[in-house]
Length: 392
Image (cartoon, rainbow, N blue to C red; front, side):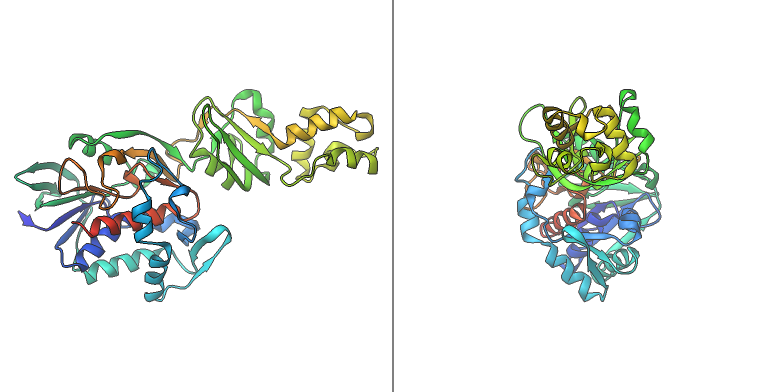
């Protein structure tokens, strides 16, 4: 039996961050994981360059049953704090659009940085063994891993959600949380492509076509969320950054609206008719050719001069608010993250500790806090891990 101050389950971003910070605070920490490689999601993220944070990481850009829960952790460990750490390790980085920060080199640099920080904190890493019995008695948690037994007054659940199962992801965190009396908000795939039913099969013929749009969710109640980025038509439905963003808000049965001509002024088709009456709707659309042809066919307008102004006004409205009705998503296999998870109602927003069971913590993707596309989820991993590390 090995004694520690804290046992961290999961060697992903949140778990490594928590372990490193706690270790450097003088805590004896062990990290346990069934996988043989730490930071597996980090390694594949951002096309292998890791979109490690976002300058605009505020609570309003996260999806949660409690929209205020993330404020404390994000406010106390900011994107700039993590960037300072990156720069201290001499990792070159660059900023893309919308506040997204990436490594110039490899995502493995971020993993190496976190492992280096763990080494500074004298953290023990035990990887590649199956987790066995996990229990709690006499204010101590006991965890069996790869035939060994570990005991500590603090246990941190950092095993993530079920997105990208090929990396070994499972719903383990939820099962463990329930066993210790925490509730779980039903998890569903997020930042994931949407699939379209057969009646919208016309758009499958456009597979590979991408265009800038404003895509929005159309919830049954309340106000939707819209994103101005690219949409991509696929052989199964819709993808691209704008659609991945919307997928975190979309629920079965709801529509998705797409403005296919963002920024177009009212009356633009009537103006095009006056300028080129023999021109076609397809030619007038500021869209890739195949997409323009398909939309004109659905709308039923050919030569502009043959259409009434009322018909063109209706076409404008439809192009600015094209409704798709997805019949699902491509599931956890293609989802970058998970919406839902361990309910925040049972956790302290300051420390991430379970309210009813001192010493139990939950951080990262395992918790019902999901960020937008573009480095937000990594920043939640760093911030929630840091917050827990102050308390273990």
